[in-house]
Length: 363
View (cartoon, one colour):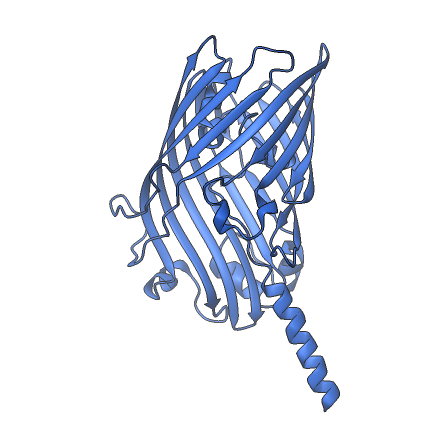
C-alpha cells in the first residue's frame, strides 16, 4: 500500500512538473526566417514581414513585389505523438485538438498556421495576416490548460528615409480581429467548440486598432552596423471594438501592453556572391520586469547568403539552438527551420523543439 501511494505521489509530481512548463511567451507574429536565426530580426528584416517586424525595414526594399500564397506551419515536439494517440485533420482547431491532448496527459501540444498575402514597395506596404495558434496541456483526461489565438489582421505601413537612408522611420497601422482562449481548466471530454466556449465566457473576441513605430539607424561604415528599435502597440492595443466582428461573445481578449524591442545587425561580404548577416535582439524592454525568466528575451542569429539562391541560418533563441535553410528563385521560396522554445520557468527550464516549413509564391 505504501508502495502504491509512493508511486502515485511520484506520478503526480512528474505530471505537475510537466504542467508548470506551459508558460510560453506568445507574440503577435513569428516568421520562419527569423525563427531560423534565433528570432532576431528587428534590425535585419528586409522583406514583406517588415510590415509586422519593423516598419522601418520597408526602407530597405529595392523593388516592389507581392506575396500571393505563403502557407506556413509550425509544430511542437509533442504534435506527432498526440496525433498518433487520436488523429485530427486541423492542428489548430480546439474542438479537434483538445480530445487528442486529453489522451496524452503531461505532453505540451503546440501548433501554428499562418498566411500573409501582401504587397510591398520601397517605403510602403499593405498585408493581411491570418494566423491560428494553440498551446495546450492536459492534467487529466477531463482537465486541460489551453491558450488559443485566431488573428485576422490588416496592416498598412509607410517609411520615411533621411540622410540618404541612413535613418529610417516607419509606421504600421494594425486592425486586428482576435478570438482568444486563455484558460487553465477546460474539460476536453465536453463540447469544446468556440461557440460553446463563448457561452461559458471562455472564448473571447474583439476588434483592436494599434500602431507600431520603427526606427533604423545605419552607420556608413564597413559591414553597415545597424541599430534598430520598434515601439509596439503604442498606448496599448485594446480589443474593445464591436463592429465588423467575426464572433459574438460577452468577453474581450486581453489588451496588448505597449512594448519596445531593440536589435543590432552587421553585414559581412565574404566574396562577390557570398555574404552573411549577423543579428542580435532584446525583446520586451518595457515588460521585462514582468518576465520571470529573462532568457526568454534574448535572441541572436546569423544568415549566410549564397547568391540570393541558397540561405543557411542559425541562432540562439531563449537559450536554445535554431537552424534554417531556404531555396529561393525569382517567384518561389521554400524554407524550413527548427528552433527551441522555452515553455518552462527560470528555475525549471524546458525546451519544446519545433519544426517549421513554408512555401511562398510571389510576383
